[in-house]
Length: 435
Ligand code: SF4
Image (cartoon, rainbow, N blue to C red; front, side, top):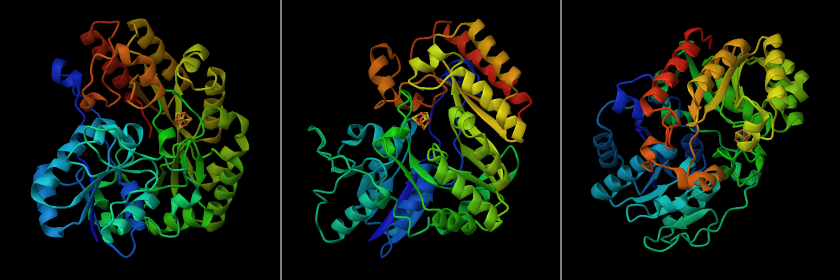
């Protein structure tokens, strides 16, 4: 079978830009589509191609139809996050308009809210970690079967609820025997750059999913609340495959979820002498409980960590379901800075914020010397517990605006003041950014 994987173009919309001419809050995603490279890896025996519309020049639908004409695809797989969900459907319609290919939608939003894709232009929806599910589906389609009975996969049924049997994910679903098909994005590689350092960055997965249940987070849907780790040889193999690319971004939502495994991985990276600069995600309570693990990873090349600090108080963290404390956040910053590890700090600004709240957040970021602060606006993504809690208050339902930089809930400040103050905070936070 010929399979074309499509990474949609940057498509999120920006209220501050459209209504107030504030261009600095527009969300731009960069980086290689590792999930598609991994899915393609699971399809040995078939012919795969990746079309990265975030890296392609030209009008996206035109580029897509040209690629379809060229590749004569039997199956088109489209991925995307929530703010790309509408564009994914537009892509699916284009596929149906110009070809007879079977359209399969997966990725973050399909995992959170598979019903969104229960439309005539989509044939199948895959929920969660999709490597094994997709392999089974493509095999079934090749045998002219309809894929009934494959867990984690639903044949669409517009007008009727999807019949989707959730998959019980296990390490078998990682299918790590085959490395990601980095070769399929070789033509785009020069564009996968960490702009702040001006260095090429490659993505590697060392773990998948998360056992925590933060109310705003989409990760839990990926593996049904399980945490799966890749074997150490597989991670080393993938890091080596990136060749002379100097920076490795471990794209796991929580690289250190199994501290023993993480320590063994760090030691293996040290022993292998890979000489990469590494960026990874960690929870602050893990840093506080395991400072020796962070020290070991520093030796392994850990340049920076991304930490979800989220809120500035224990009450706020509890409201978000974060199961962590502000004290841990402060202590983690001290430990990491002591080790020379830079910090990308994620914070969530509530639409209820007053100017004083923004000021307090800005001062806290400055006092903690967060190297690169990332401030998002609290956004209830469909399919998350936060969405169920706040759905009645949502005033913007168009998913194009679910970029995490728009307020889809009512703001306490006037909307214009909210975005001006938010943009001011981002500007001052990024003025001395060191990553
Ligand atoms: S925010 Fe982090 S710790 Fe919480 S569920 Fe998501 S990945 Fe897990």
